[in-house]
Amino acid sequence: MFLTPLVGRLAAVVALGLAPAWVLAQKTAPSPSSPKTLLPAAIDKALVRAQIPREAVTLLVVDAAGKQPARLNYRSLVPMNPASVMKLVTTYAALDVLGPDFLWTTQLLMDGQITDGVLNGNLVVRGGGDPKLVVERLQALLAQVQSSGVKAIRGDIVLDRSAFRMPARDAADFDGEPLRPYNASPDALLINFKSLVLKFTPDPLNQRALVQVEPPLAGIVIDESVPMLRVGRCGDWRSELRASVDNPNRLQFAGTYASACGERFWPTAYPEPDSFAARAIEGSWRALGGLLTGTVRDASEVELATLRARGSLSGDKASLRLDAPSLPLRDIVRDVNKFSNNVMAQHLFLTMGRQAQPGPNPQATPEAGRTALAAWWKKSLPQQAAPILDNGSGLSRSERISAASLAAMLQHAAQSRVAQDLLDSLPIAGTDATMRERAKGVAGQAFIKTGSLRDVAAVAGYANGASGARYIVVGIINHPNAGAGRGALDALIQWAVQER
Image (tube, rainbow, N blue to C red):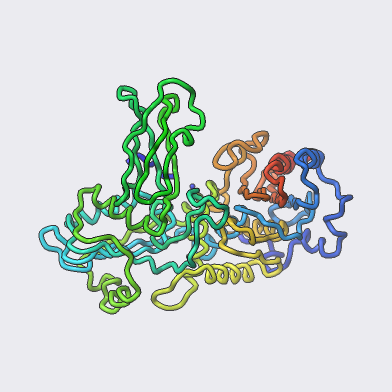
């Protein structure tokens, strides 16, 4: 396999459910949106260069402990689309509600008798909503089945994905890019984020580049190589491949690969996402040497009801049951915030909804997720305007939150039992993840979640001031030129650290 695995109590006024002084002051002070409000010169100049009007911006820099007046407060009560910065709300709520050690479980149950290495019956795979069931972990789980004595299945592999109940969705709905991995939708049995990783390795002796694919998928024919050019630079190598990646049964290359590119990887979503889990499980089972006489298929509702009735899904009547726990939530949160993983964030959102449901077979739904997170917000931050929630990932045109509400939540988080887990999940300015190339002038001194959509650029997190004080920094731009405004947001972070 070649795929590398992809990261004290609250101050008294907040603990008592009271708003920090800097927020209360806004309710009687003149509107912070007044054009006379002074902005730091570097931020103002960057906005002018980007041709972004002040009315499209909200900025807030405030003491993390909530004890001092805001250093900068501009339009902080205005709800804005935060893009992926909304992941801060979801990840903090999940850490607080579920706990940093929370685990998801994927179960494998042998529904039949095992004789001489043969399962005479079905292998049932129950998805529990694990957000990071990547190919290495899937194959390790299937290898465990084989090491337990099952080498062949005389029956089917039956998938139980009923833990999540999602509305039908076209991957192209959001931005017309259905093959972008960030558009993957949640799934109780989410395998490898429903994405392929193509590996291209030069084979100069045979003037070709070898093609490998992870995970192995059943029922798809893939070109094993592509002609290689020995001359020329490595330019837009993906376009030069002229790949046909929109056919779920065929992956081929009509172009060439430049030797100057060396070894390259290309992650891409699968064009038939609903069949991805079945194809990946069958492909991996067979790649490990396992035999299967039947098919890999989704269980029907009637079949699931029958399995539950006779105890097969609880393990009581199964010949063998294997439980595969996920990585702990604190590790999942690190991946969500460091790398802004949308589908993982949505899994946290859905799981909070599922955990709040009564009964023995709760189902996660977007509605339940919104209800659960709204209830948490009302309990934890009753004095703050609640965010408008959609799916909790920020991959949305409708989600909204004000800088004031977001900063109050970050103050709450800074004094909570999970403060370090949240802080550890944030990209470090000028150092790693989505902040590696940003705010380099204050490298290592700011811990910032970024957000980016068409017409949206945002940052939020913590910054260590030159005096040793810690500040909360929030900056959001909603404007067609938002992408050009990242320099203004970096200037905001630098200003917060340098305490000018």
